[in-house]
Image (cartoon, rainbow, N blue to C red; front, side, top):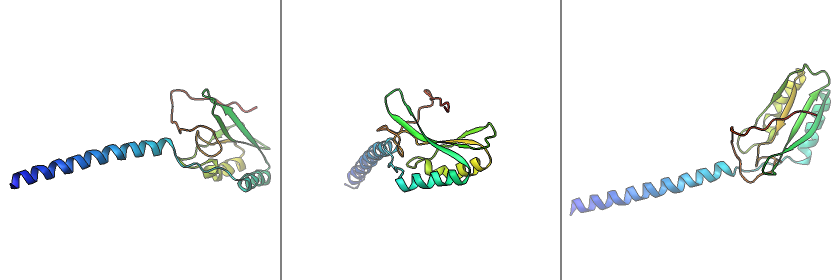
Length: 143
């Protein structure tokens, strides 16, 4: 009797563990591919433009179209006296280009050209899924 109870308890606990692992894995995978989108507001755009102006820099909205048609957007900031070097700053998951704009301000004040893109399915960039594909990198050449 006791042995049957322990066996049934083990089967129930193992089943719950397996079910929890599957449901948890699917949930985490969905969350990784569909992060919360934090769009940039008009006030944040104006603040970024004012910051660039105070740093004697030009801030331009830039975009490229990915092979699947998603429009990927960002800011290209060029100081008046650029040193010839450029830096691409990438934000974290669920964030947007504003999350690393403080580093961009510092770099611009030190005469670096800076590209601050929104990753796919983040900020103002298009796309339904956030992808992290290193096999198909896209290149950007400022105009």
